[in-house]
Amino acid sequence: MSESVILGIDVGATGIKGALVDIARGELITERTKLKTPDNKTPETILSSVVELANRISPDRSYPIGLGFPSVIIDGVCMTAANIDKSWIGQNLQSMMSDKFTSPVSVINDADAAGLAEIHYCSAAEKEGKVIFLTLGSGIGSSIFIDGKLVTNTELGHILFEGDIAERSVSNSARKRRDLSWEDFGRELGEYLLYLNRLFYPKLFILGGGISKKHALYAPYMDPSIAVRPAKKYNNSGIIGAALAHHLA
Ligand code: BGC
Image 1 (cartoon, rainbow, N blue to C red):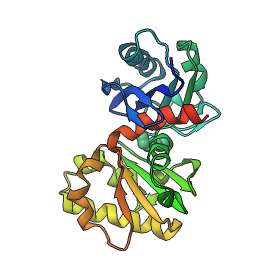
Image 2 (spheres, rainbow, N blue to C red):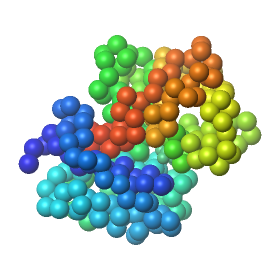
Image 3 (spheres, rainbow, N blue to C red):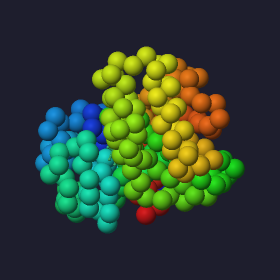
């Protein structure tokens, strides 16, 4: 077993994904395995899916595990539950995971993990200054980096935007629910980025989540004054970043 290979798991509101990750290269070294997130999204059902996924990827359970999870996590404890069952609030995810696995485990907010993967493997020049990573999925997750250093547990998807919390109107699930064209979605997302820009003035926004593969369809409708790029590792950044966060912990 090499410490540079870690099992990365990314828990999302619709899918739980994982793979073994080579930390030196920031690449998956097994195929990505995915299970549907259980409908009720309670601690019991999600953890049993995480165990099932880990067993499928590494039946001998020999690898350390990094888990990205859609909650503000402070000292291993879940503080919020926007798109998962509310009974997660106050649960010590770190201890629950350690009870299930004998290998070392660490837990981190899913967007912090995905952003880490994007920033860690990018060029030194891109690391400089303030960068905001956003992941657009069932919700909107965020991570902020100052000179490559993560400011943990930011929730820019929960900022009030046009009368509601932003993730209700500009996440990928909101795009589907509202049946928005790529043009309309691009324009609204662009407005949201302009708004965040007026609050934080980052040097760059990086957009991740499954939708990052479709960047070319909506990016032309966003305000050109804002520097934006899609996540280079697309939707795998959550898995890679969860593994990386364990390595860096
Ligand atoms: C949660 C965040 C999470 C994001 C993406 C939001 O609803 O509050 O913690 O990072 O969804 O999963």
